[in-house]
Image 1 (cartoon, rainbow, N blue to C red):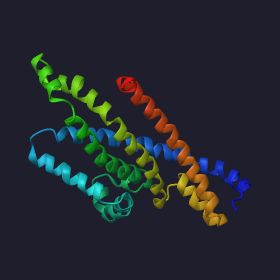
Image 2: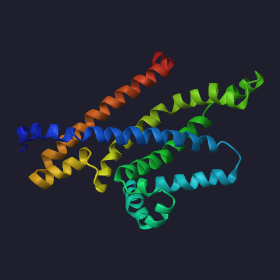
Image 3: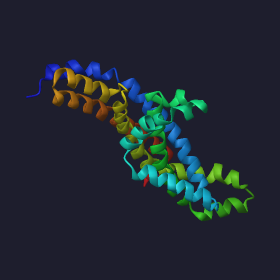
Image 4: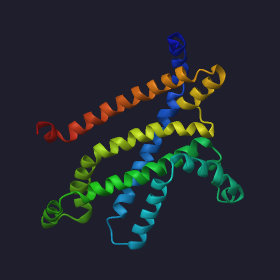
Length: 230
């Protein structure tokens, strides 16, 4: 049976890893969103080399597990230490924290770029033609017409990506980062009580994701009130 006294005892210990979990999620989601938006916009042009390069990047990061990507960036790039030192980048790739950020950011950028690309292409052509008829420049049309509509349409799908990325931060524990899952693994090795520890860790992730989902739903309602009225 589950020992609820032990369950309540380990909750504060696990919560000590929550700030790192939030840092990893917030930074990787922010960087990933910026990269995803740039990649989605770059695919709207007619430059075949750029488009196919982006699609190759997306297929690589969408087609391989995040766990493998973290391993390759942290352990794989460490094999090229002399070259990284020569380029002045070793300080970045020797730290597990930044390797986790890079892996998470690139992964969510790949998925996010496809979400945003579809949202941008889903903007009605008539609105773009009307903006052109009013004399709006291409950049002004993008800023005032295309992006606001596309971002609103992308909120439901991108919300799922945010939740997946928050859960993906748990994989950072494999490269010695002591976030919630990392602390949970340490507790299991000390107490041999995996059930209580993982239930407590799962409860923390569940609560965090519930709060984020509620915030994203409120944002969607605020940006698309016409859907609520419908």
